[in-house]
Length: 443
Ligand code: GUN
Ligand code: ZN
Image (cartoon, rainbow, N blue to C red; front, top):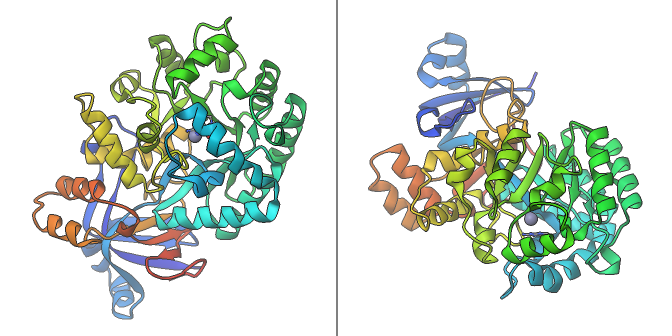
């Protein structure tokens, strides 16, 4: 039996809630016990070490002491692994950005070795930024999905990925067909879905690059494999929304294109969802689908201001995501900081507990995986990270002047980047330690 005891400050959201600021669990001096990669206990250190055998473990050095704050590994509900190399590409909004930068980059992923090297880089960078689970777009090439899942499995990470379906309005080399896309996806689902910690997402890129026939076949797959995820983009950019009206005149709005093909259901994750009608909000809620708010991407591509109040008013599952490579940081803290600024521009607000919730328990529950990850509850998989609130001189000085946990959390988030992540654990094993090259060793 592999038992590990971690002592430090602990923070998580043990349940799904509309009020994270009133529903967090915090131990200033806490203990987290993992058994064979699963959390078996969370509680107060004083209570834990009042038991003699536990005290002996402490005296014998059998306890890992953490100076920083332990929180669940974060969940990035929307990212593109092939795009990490083209982050920060200048000067275009969505449709031109896709044509000028994205499609030429994604062509390279027909090569399995190239895809493997980039998947390795991307996944290690996720760990370095405190993310332990992500829902990830590969490219149209099945090799890119195989590469991603093989690498994820070699690290023992819980990951979601899918082959992009795209049969029009893109370069020839990135095009599949309604039928080839269906059969390739089906084979990948059979190979990878629930294979170890891997899970599959049916991935039509977005409605403009799929014919009606392809969307219909994607819906058929979704019906045949009801516990797979679906990931796509929705109403990100006003030019895109106008194009949808031209391409699908028979549908009253963007979401209805997906709905008509059976693609709006539980475990369907819609990236962006900025420019929506009341009907679309209502339908997302009624069908149990969820939205990935991608703050740094929305600012970078000038896509618009996400209306978080409408999403919350309709009780739609919500998470915060990086959308790398349109997003400008893999750090979900940095993306939380951008979320706050987007709210400020609309005279609304998001508090630091809520934004952290949307990257942990809230994200997990919007995706239906909260029994696995996203919190520190006993019985869940032991993916967690240690944060250093003194990671930079400016942050350290700011912390000394904070008078509450909320204030500290907010200042850390606002000033943060990957330096705040001190350690990352998967299944109770250390996979990243700042300043070293740790991967796959336990401590
Ligand atoms: N819409 C369709 N494809 C993409 C993509 O790769 N990134 C973003 N941000 N939006 C998209
Ligand atoms: Zn995206």
